[in-house]
Image (cartoon, rainbow, N blue to C red; front, side):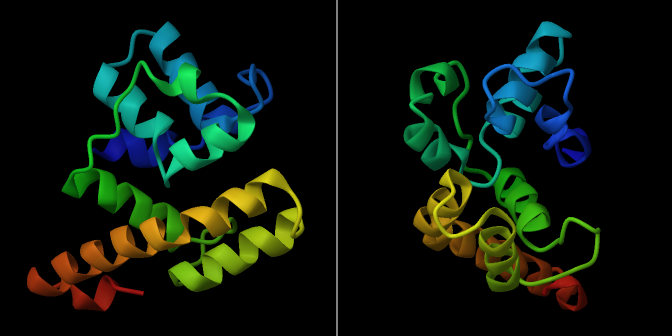
Length: 141
């Protein structure tokens, strides 16, 4: 779903922030604007967001949307975890290291990303295997 890839970080926009948790804020904003539930759910759960919601005490707020655990979900996580903030490609390990460096080792985002690492790596690996099987291995990072 292309819209999820485009909108997954919309919750960082200053005029949208309500909880301080960008995945949830983005989903809430999209729901208020009447976007489809599936899009809201993909935004809410992108890149293993349930782990961060637990650390922030916002698990209940994430409950209206389920993590669909599909090929589309994995592809969204892959795109997010293999692209640096400047838009340049990276690999999942490089992306996680960049996040920890940017936020600092004790920040809640750094704690979350380290806890979520195995799930993020697994989604990236599944997506890259699918890319190779489709003859698009050159896109794998």
